[in-house]
Image 1 (cartoon, rainbow, N blue to C red):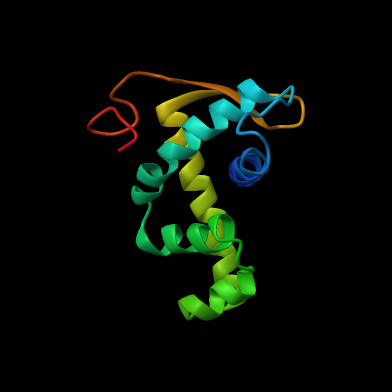
Image 2: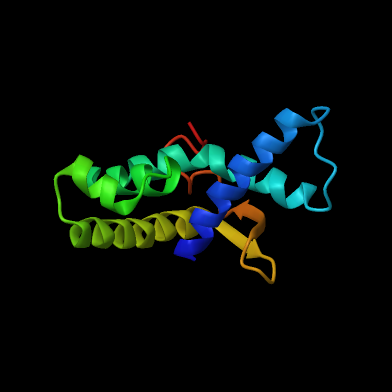
Length: 130
């Protein structure tokens, strides 16, 4: 599922770009799945804040900003191997936070198509994505 998080972020970015280039509406057959991804993506920032600073930085650089792991390692002042480990561990921790918060439904390609919060309080102290 760590790859699912990355793919989800990429799909959300692609979806936003495709909406910007169109008439403002997404007419693809994956509308519901993309809507779920957009909603879930809004909750990712508070979930990322629950990670330690080193893992949060690694995921922000490598997965959200699209920086290569070699460049991310240089920016963080660690070896490439160290950055790869941080990214892997960070993804694992983010997956645990996500699964604690929500039930996730994937399609056959491993893309998130639907999610449901386990309880209103499960996604943080306020029960919101803020």
